[in-house]
Image (cartoon, rainbow, N blue to C red):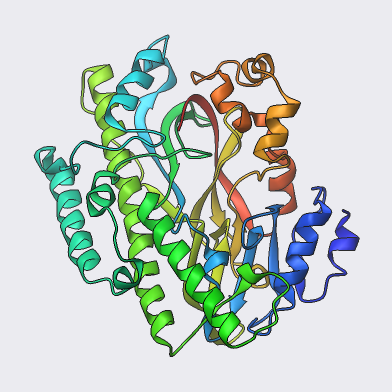
Length: 405
């Protein structure tokens, strides 16, 4: 679909010049744009593609309501990155052993820790992380939505802190334009975020049916401010966003320990870690009024704010600084965005293609990650060009190691 056709959708503003958008995605955007609870136009990022519940790569402002399915079930999913003191020439010739060290410390896929991760013995940063975990646990015990969820494996909630998960979640070692080594990772709120999200989606659907709301897509049902269901969800939503951020902080800590073990010395970090959600909702002020803003696969990009836009595991990634574009609700893309579904990617490519497209990157090169092949994603350079008025590039990163779930 062309940029001109996209701009013809009422109540939508897009940053998709030079980036193809399929018709199913456009129809999903139309459904969102017709919702009566919108507080302005829907902003469409260049990595936009069809999503479950709502379009990935969209920014949705609402008044007095939140759409749980637009936030999604991986609440607080996002990125973290930190620049280390290590330079490229100080890395070992082979990164396979380092990858194994990290995989031993950070469970991937459906795996979890045998017991809750407790980094209190790892110095001052470990103590701070442990204390943050205690506060998170105290808030968890008070969540009212757990009464609606009912029976739940609380042990799993704690044991999944500091774990990667599967799908497009990853841990990477990258080099910037000065050959400095960065650690970058992508993960979210694990099973507890999924459970909270699914519970809220179900509540919203039930309310829509009771009140006979006519929706073109029942996944776009919402919760109204001032109701018990809304209050329970918002409390749990904020907790899950904090859980996701803490999960990433714990993993970053473990990766830096693995680096220390591999290189045989302490590893200093030269910049504060960049932490950013890209599946979340928050109260913000735009165009002179406070509204709920849901970023479904989009990153906050206020003027001067740092963010992360990753490519696929064989392409470049970017540390960016926001320009505060008002029409985008101060947002930018959260990555390259899929151009092929997982099933379509498996049908279109072979393991030989995967090996060729990830040449020079220490990573899995088997059928289990074929759906994450770089060719399944949009051209990250085209995506970046389409949002040049949303962000400026601060650092350009190239992967040398990638761990997938």
